[in-house]
Image (cartoon, rainbow, N blue to C red; front, side):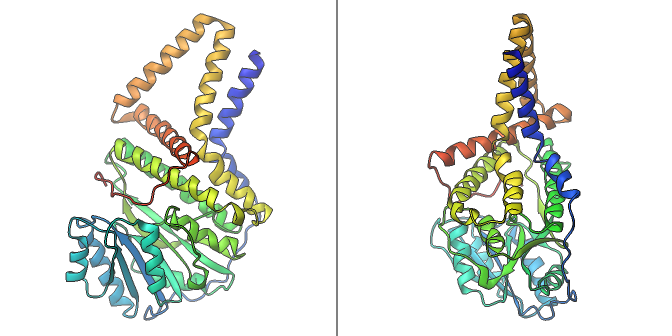
Length: 377
């Protein structure tokens, strides 16, 4: 029996670590697939439509609109569309009154980002749709580098590189920044070997004809970007297409955000089951390694702890009591700490727990359509 518990514990450790270390190491050793980049020049920007949704983003809008203004100065025919999801802080009025270069679509109430993006995509006239968030700023050369990537006809979508700001504001932000740097590296490996397994909503682009139909309850960025892969084209990552976003600094904000995102991600995963079945074997391996295993990291972590306690009990009941006491003490101290290594480790564990809670909610049929901006961003 001891061997069984030790084996379960070891398997759980491997399952927790594999998506972040084992999987990228495998990809790093595989042959690379290059693309035929064209000239980095989007010209007047007439082939692009920039889309974003907003809800109570009055604080972020001044810098966002200034960023768009600079992009429009460089690419005067760039089309910009924004959806307001029933904001109560004057977000829509700011866009309408101060940004004549943005076409505003008012939602008339809380409908959610997926709903808003579908309206914007239907109204957009550009050959390439570029998706971003209301609190994200784009590098002035982003559209030039997108144009270079789309010169390859096998490229159906492009993920940008997200640079997070404020990583030194708290342990929550520091761990979030570390996680995202690792995520960016994994996407680099995926892109180099074929396709990335889904884009982040902060910055990505697809060919307009690839935009799919989907319900309002799914993650629109993941659904839309994965459609590129489902259609047999490449979804690549370009580190020259840069976006900037401020990290969430409060632990409670980040925990709630991860629960909501995980619930929507797993619901999306289930909704896309018929399309996932048609993926090539290598893409199924990448999808499972990058997405599926991660969703259950918190469950593996808890199962591993239980297996360790049971193994300790079989060796010596006193050892089990000591180990349980240490675990409780570490968790208590971690939750009370605001900086240092223990606080950072606690953030990692909380992220895994939040994810498995979100998956559990989705498995029970709970869905999320609307969102609220993090107050500590």
